[in-house]
Image 1 (tube, rainbow, N blue to C red):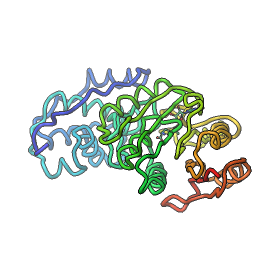
Image 2 (cartoon, rainbow, N blue to C red):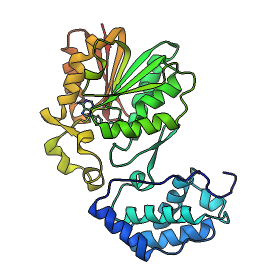
Image 3 (cartoon, helix red, strand yellow):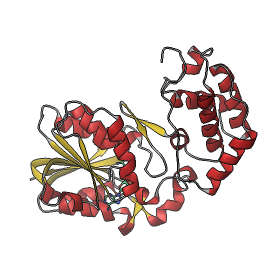
Length: 320
Ligand SMILES: C[S@@+](CC[C@H](N)C(=O)[O-])C[C@H]1O[C@@H](n2cnc3c(N)ncnc32)[C@H](O)[C@@H]1O
């Protein structure tokens, strides 16, 4: 942005809840007046965040303006005298008030970083996680040197995996599915806003459970970060996750294995010979998933891989 005014600020819209209504009310009545410079704005946001009990309010204020301005993290430090539009200041204050109500940062600012992408996110989709960036890396390693691969992403949410694979791996085709029409609406926005250059068919978004939207089709890669928390484990999650992220994205039946089992069962019919199945898994059940894969006729070489923190978080298998 060359130190100028933020020119591509978008409206942050989330379904209204009581919390959001309270936030909006605070925003309407008690909001500090928009400041003239970025430094003034960060000071004002810091006051709001500190009063709301946010840890490290100044750092968070800097992060809010950087995220909303599509700028690097230290933008407010390196360009403190940048003039700020009122609309941007209002949006930043709204995000700060949402943070003080406990909303996750990514929802409050309406976007999340994922690999090289900045994705639109709101409460209809899971906030893409760092370990999922690693799942993408595993798929890209498989795709290296293959230019005509077809990839299926089951449970695409924001579209994070599908769009990252489509833009970084240059497969011929990526199909992304989700059982949630709300999630697909977010993915559609992200697919539209990210230029998927060089990809013949782009990312195709389809609604439906597991393999229902790809009846009779085969792929070189099936990748998924399915819901994998057992219902009874939801209570153990931090409230910032449990109370804000969509429960259908987090948890499922059969002790968190319902969707994973369905993906495993249908994989041989939807993978070409030599094709890759790559799943993100709960570390408590990674070996169970590998055993289930090994016991699935048509799948071989089931293996568990570690994330960067050394946890068993991925299960890969090959179609015989
Ligand atoms: C853990 S989120 C993953 C979202 C995204 N892929 C990511 O990694 O950030 C799981 C997604 O699977 C979807 N989902 C849940 N059950 C499903 C099913 N039976 N078939 C297809 N998608 C499902 C949810 O709506 C949610 O978007």
